[in-house]
Image (cartoon, rainbow, N blue to C red; front, side, top):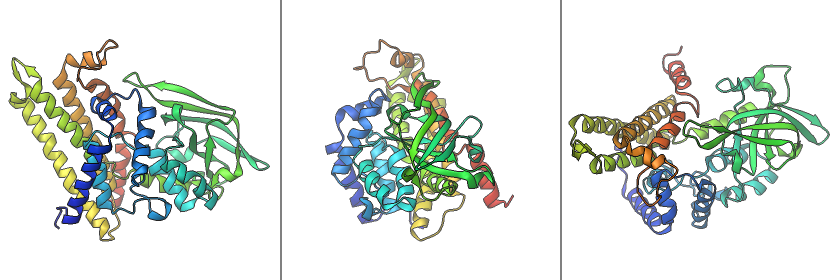
Length: 391
């Protein structure tokens, strides 16, 4: 199998690089490079609007819904080059998660209203899945929606909700029937975050940031027209969404960006009055993680090219998720070790933003989540065992 990009794909890569050089704002690029998420609520929509104006707002969407119609390889190239250029990620909850569900299962009215607004970054979406005691075992969720005329009345709690403090809408799994198997009594609702009865409470993370929340629903009235698909069929839609959530979850571009940052640190920072890169032990550790990342990139390309030949993926998504997230954690660990006490300067309240010290400690702490969300790595290993070993 030839894993090299052909001439057309190389030309596309050059086009993406030229676009990023010309259109990615320098202030956004710098904040992403330094790991500064202080303006994430404005940087992400601003970048999405730039992409959408160029016709690149939804790389994975079909053309009929306003997407690019790109191949899987083109999508991989685009995602990788964006990460390497220090572009902010697109808000996955809208573009990559709820939108595919709406395109596949939503009504024409829902598609016509929500999809253009997602493309234009007019609506910020968040996800309402996990609950206390219902994380990996999502089918046990208890947030309830009871039918009252032409509305559902929703009561319950969601946890580990990412960036919901900025959200205009939330897509939620709610229980509408408790009489049968748990998976058969779940519905998929689209809820306006401005609806009376919704409260957002911050959950502070290890790095001290407000990234995730608890969302409480107290007699929240949701129009029946905001239900996606059939009542009690939400589990089917949730599984479909999770398949899209794990798309490109290996994060090749983000890993390559962080590896590049690690090498820059090792060349410029000193230990015992010489560059850290000249420390044989530390240099060996960098080389080892770089080789593992290269192997992951090759494996990812093999999966992408196989999909292009209509080979349905098996356990590969789980394998890529495990390796990609663990490699990212190892890279950020090495970054913190490279910075040493200097890392405390970047995290300090009085740090001069003009000093180019990446926020490595904050990034390291935040990236501990990678092996948990999108299906924990322990769950992914169970999936691999079941699919390959037939356990």
